[in-house]
Length: 88
Image 1 (tube, rainbow, N blue to C red):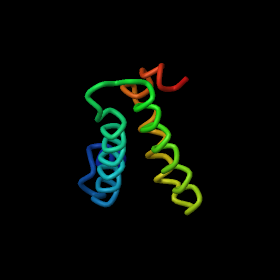
Image 2 (image 1 turned 120 degrees about the vertical axis):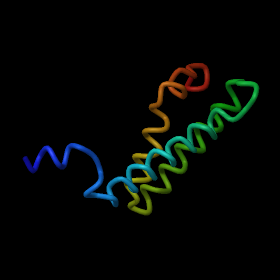
Image 3 (image 1 turned 180 degrees about the vertical axis):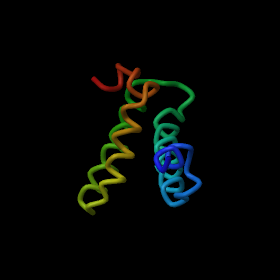
């Protein structure tokens, strides 16, 4: 019975809900920064991807592993991963 209450939602854990919401919004922000250009030439997108990787390195240096995972999740989204010309 206890497990049923937990699995119904985040009503008993608002901090988990806020942390998840922040993670998703930060990930979406990084994806939007990679995809913000109107023309998708490979060099511009590659520079944006390199910036996200650089942010991830800075987060790792600060032991901010949540930030590292946000960067990894943003780069692993289907909309960014499909940009194969920029990854080369």
